[in-house]
Image (cartoon, rainbow, N blue to C red):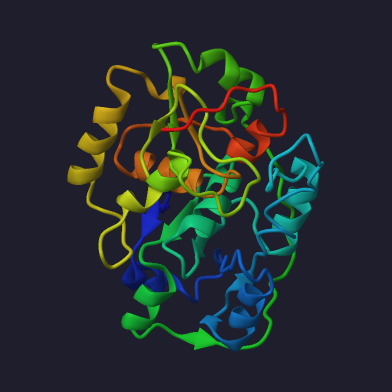
Length: 283
């Protein structure tokens, strides 16, 4: 049976929506109003979908002065969450949001981090689903619990110490996917310090998308990433952002483009700046 491991089209999801071994997860979220995603889900969501809250389900406790804004939850805790959603062996997961796929990509990456490869992001998200006349529901939905057994892949993660060690090394690439004006330090709407990690390159995550919010074709994505990477192999590439969310979108795009799996610096900028002794660049 075919599994989807990067993206899936609305038409393909519609063909499997009633399959018992398929689970759809709504990851809608608003940074300005943390409850908006849940409200929107209860008003309308893809039929049968369960809901994942960025702060409650896809993030762990913030430790002031130590972690970034969205640290990972403990693997055992997150495994219980996945179990309660009905995700286990042999289940195809489809994630989606209404924000270009950035929150959906966080769950995509987290499932892969715990060893579940049958997960894909709905290309174009909720907009694409509605344009395809896909079935929707309202209210709160649940699925029968199963056992999710995590197989943690630590090689997908980069620590702050690792980032600090490699940021001057030309054999590595550290790529910041925040908007260019945030990377340059001209604005900073979320964190108390503006700028970027010295030695990092900027490749905004929204450049992965076309005007309709769908991933660009691999023929466009692959050369764009290859120009950034040069001869650097995937295992020596680290993606960062503000707090480990949008960087997942570029990890998704990279894998969709056939270029392998890089590492995620989960703490990203918001963790880097917890230590005032760490270097900061502006330009």
